[in-house]
Image 1 (cartoon, helix red, strand yellow):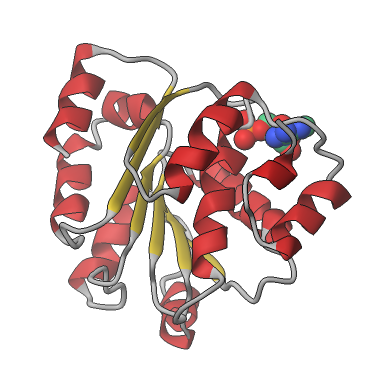
Image 2 (cartoon, helix red, strand yellow):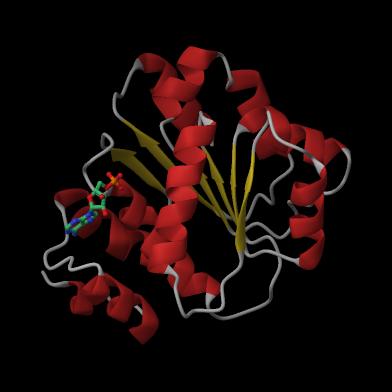
Length: 195
Ligand code: AMP
């Protein structure tokens, strides 16, 4: 199934073409239509399978219309991975007018606070620093429509479960939850089941 069957907006299809993606990967074929419908997804996929586009394209498609509020949140385990997801969002979202930023520790708070204050549609965050911003009220999550827990198994391995539970408690109940994990352990099943 080529990408143009997914009913993605033209700028997104143009970006896919520019990146020379011709055929959706299996996780993209499986997940994109379901996320487009606003349904929750548990995706079993490792890095390298195209999972980032699988969740990012339908989210960007939705963010293209509507207000410049924090409406999509991607939570992932490491700074490096947050930068990678953000870079992908920039590529997939070129020309859409969507604003995104990263939130993680080990770098200054102020540029992050300023980016949040200017207004972003999408935040790619690591749990600890995101909680700092939530507590300081610089990140307001009550407009979030999509939350992605990416590399959920790694986040549990690192011990982020309590942080994730707290972050999720700040989100509207009415939202789409997407969970991506390389493994489907009992812990992941429990996390997915509880949301
Ligand atoms: P990811 O698993 O999201 O990190 O993606 C792995 C790599 O595959 C990245 O370099 C993407 O740019 C690339 N990619 C994602 N989807 C496709 C596709 N449908 N066709 C070709 N390359 C892709």
